[in-house]
Amino acid sequence: MTDYVYQLIAIIIYMAAMLLIGYYSFRKTSNLTDYMLGGRSLGPGVTALSAGASDMSGWLLMGLPGAIYVSGLVEAWIAIGLTVGAYLNWLFVAPRLRAYSQVSNDSITIPSYLENRLKDTTRLIRIVSGIIILIFFTFYVSSGMVAGGVFFKSSFGLDYHVGLLIVSAVVIAYTLFGGFLAVSYTDFLQGIIMFLALILVPVIGIFAVGGIEGASESIRAVDPGLLSLVEGASVLGVLSAVAWGLGYFGQPHIIVRFMAIRSVKETKQARRIGIGWMAISLLGAIATALIGIAYFQQNPSQSLSNPEAVFIALGQIMFHPFVAGIMLAAVLAAVMSTISSQLIVTSSALVEDLYKIVVKKQATDKQYVTLGRIAVLVVSLVAMFIAWEQNKSILDLVSYAWAGFGAAFGPVILLSLFWRKLTTWGALSGMVIGTITVIIWGNNDYLKGLMFEIVPGFILCLLFAVVVSIFTYRHNTEIEREFDETIKLLDQEK
Image 1 (cartoon, rainbow, N blue to C red):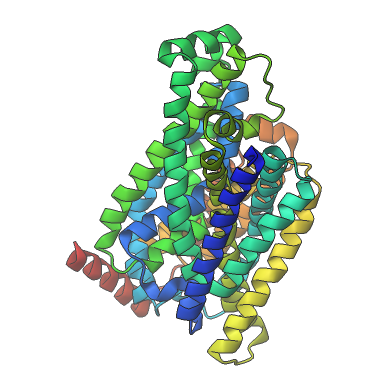
Image 2: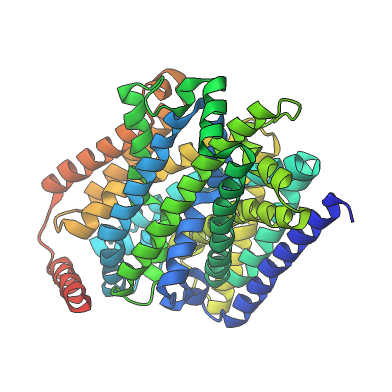
């Protein structure tokens, strides 16, 4: 058999496994809570790896290695910021959000949690939150589809659009039918595949380039600055990169996992698993890029046309075609896990937070689940339209959506969990200002060059939320009771 056939068999086996998990989850999904939140039944391992896999996306195996391959270790500041941000998110947000979302009317989405937490009778906070999720997740899903198209073009020489359609079709199918459980179980499996691949490629690769000494000599021969964390960096540039960590507090597809774990107590175990997985995976991605620089310097007859495909190229060069196919499946896993997570959150925003509020038409659970599936399909089609012309890099699309969520929701989520006096109008003003700041800043080349848009967006959201809340605060007995009940529940679960 040719290399191509071996790799194709591995990819087909992977795709079939994803669809089987989707079918299994479909059989276990009977109502809207099951479809949107998996009945709050996830264990710590599934929670941790599904959060990590849905977080990292194609950026982990394509975007980050590509950036380091081109610019060197200076791009690793993003990974450092993300690791710190993820740890703080697990430490402070996970246990409190799990408790508070249950205490506050058993909320199953981020917009419904904010509405219930703030006792918003205008329904505005839910509608505005739902619209923000729709805007930025459409770009986020689009980035995954771009990664899928690039993957099949780099790996099999297929047309970019064919690759985009294949990835989109499979991920839409298992998300559409299996809902949150399918997304979480597939993310868990995808997280394991990604983890193993990011260990194997650099471990085998280091022998192929003559060990650590051989690798460092070859990298220095290309450019000594590639091994420096500060070469070519500015203070604002480093701050912008590290500031990616701020985004974690507001990513709906990640923090919704905290609401779905079985108990508050299990968040500690999930944190250890999740951060361990993340740290090793990020180190593997960085090492892959550096080994890629060394390998192609030592083998000038072999060229790399797309830096974002360095992981794919090394996997195909260093492993048996079938194993290389599994490595390729790891890239697909990274891409598909994020798309599916974002689709299910967008679907829940459309049905739970917009349709129920705006249309106000009562329906059965079965009808709501059907509407959720229609929402998955509609958002997917819009995202495919954006991704069809590959005019932006994966990292550009991801960074824009990441900043949007981090600035719009991050400060509001933190204040809602730790500050009793946050008000509806404070939260609304912060979310709107954060969103507008990211849109304006992120679409202005001069401002974007100065600093990552999440920094001004996060600061202004926090400032407006606090100031407006101070002026609009009114004592609310129900809010006080729920806040105290959440703290009591956290103390009991320690």
